[in-house]
Image (cartoon, rainbow, N blue to C red; front, side, top):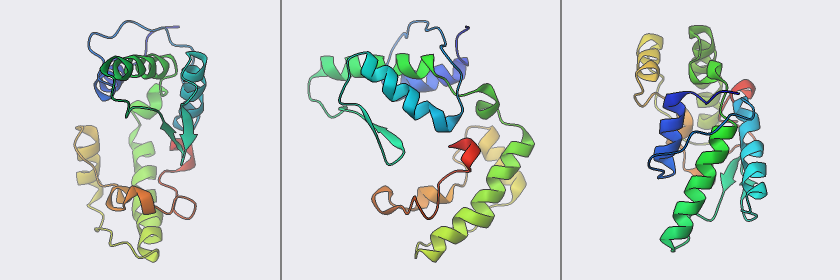
Length: 164
């Protein structure tokens, strides 16, 4: 297979502190909800047995003090994310897909979070929201307004099923 989307790879490299990342062949492009499991399996196959799924995300020993270990896990995470990148349609979603997400945030997620006692800001207009999303700016996402440690994930899933 070919390499993953260049911007995606740059973002992953920055996230994990990888400078001059090597080319990595894609094993499989995945939907967002499948990426976590694939990356965790890849990490375990690479010897990082203390990497696991927790609350829908990946938990790993990034806190280690040894700079060499931190660099090694960063490289391993970069490699696994590059092997199992998000499908291009999710990296560059159509306006229709964006509209589904916006409507979910506005009509379902924000009211759900409010019903759990969180003060969620009102949704911006569609045009403004789409512009911020398309121009890599911080777009309105009600889940960002809730502390991670108290987020009611079971009651108010952060994303639509097809984006998870």
